[in-house]
Figure 1 (tube, rainbow, N blue to C red):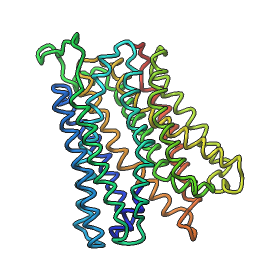
Figure 2: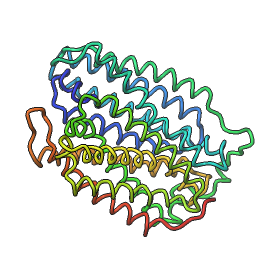
Figure 3: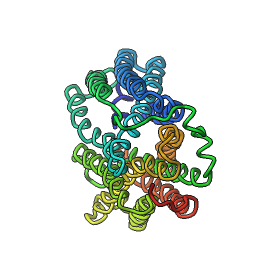
Figure 4: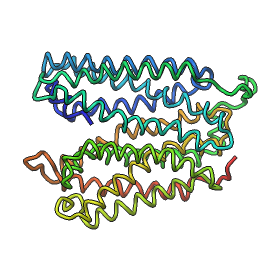
Length: 403
């Protein structure tokens, strides 16, 4: 959301800065994959790691942006942003994402979908709450050029401190039910990877549809602000970003809670993919992004597409741990969930980067820096992936009645 402001402030192009976001998603997924066992063994250690690394990563990013503003075009500043935002904060995101999930599933054993929905919805709700605050800090001293506008680095430092305090309080409060007996190492039996091998095709199907859904979500969400401008809603970008964030959080909570009442949680993914395919196809057939500014109905179709994609993106996240628990049990769920989140890591390297590649090479940019034809072309890419994800859900993930 703030890549343009950061790139202008430190004197680097937007594409270079966006790699920091891609790296953050990559290390989020990979840290979850490799630290899943740490979460499984000691929830307090993992939540403390998350609090420290996320807070330090945010503050460090702010300091690197400050240095880049003082030295426009500095390679050291760019590398520092990659390290702090991409690597350090990415680790905090991964461990912080995993830490509360199993605990809440244990507290709400009969409504696991509701529990994970509450936990994962925090990611979407945070955007809705924090985006206006961060924008206000940025607007207190807007970026007008390289090194001009201190709001951009102050925003990261202020929010980093706030997030650390909130996460640390959560770390102190986090606890498993007193009735839960954590299996000893010798009681757990097979390792997480061996449990996965008992149903390899199902795991591959879950991993693929998770990866494809996140890739599509990142591809469109990364272009969201530009699409709003293309369809004539540039003046309402801040409000609309908060609305899409509400749909993101609502999808995480709503789809997951709804799945508690379904015989097979995989049905949720079929619904998500069907809605996404339908909405994407409509905008493609009507050339909604290209013509939305001059047609109110097409503008509405574009908004519906972005709302559905955000809701499906969020719902895909919240249903993964419960779907895995239905197929593989609760014994090693944090470790298995962590391995599955490697899909998020690779989606982070492909989603927005492929979208940027398409926008750069298809169509042309106008005087306002917008490329409606390019954004429209991204939809062909996401439609193809949504169809493949639907096939994975239909034919690779076995029907499994909820545990």
